[in-house]
Length: 184
Image 1 (cartoon, rainbow, N blue to C red):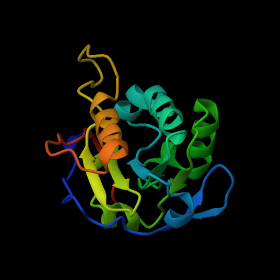
Image 2: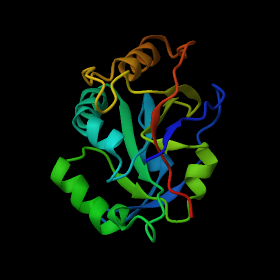
Image 3: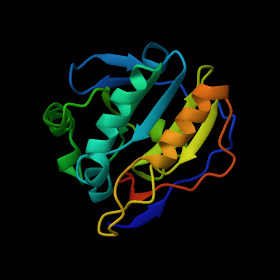
């Protein structure tokens, strides 16, 4: 596990479009079809990363809390499954069903989407407004495995609340930290 910070995309960056397989229903899903009326959170996650495992329950809670407010969440795994078979689409589906993910869990086999978003780690969070312009790229909160800080998602919740209140971006953003994306 290599501790890797996220890359900070410039605010206002347009969300790169995609068409990826949803591992739960085996259908191709597009950003346009999945985006929320008031915002969209794109999360790069995977099955085996201890940083993702640490926050999984809060991701479910966050997605449920904000779906009712018009912000949809989308999870994408871009890891190399040849070298990390625990992140394979079959196991992604199993993980999504066991954790009752209320968001699609998409597989980025070519890793082109992770590169388009400049994703670097898992978890990596990108919050876009209703027009798919980036308003937040940063951490969920200060909790990490073993640091004793409770998982609250307070940084991301604050960014989502600001977006809902006035559509603006949070000026100070801390990068996410996690395992590096497993590139081919």
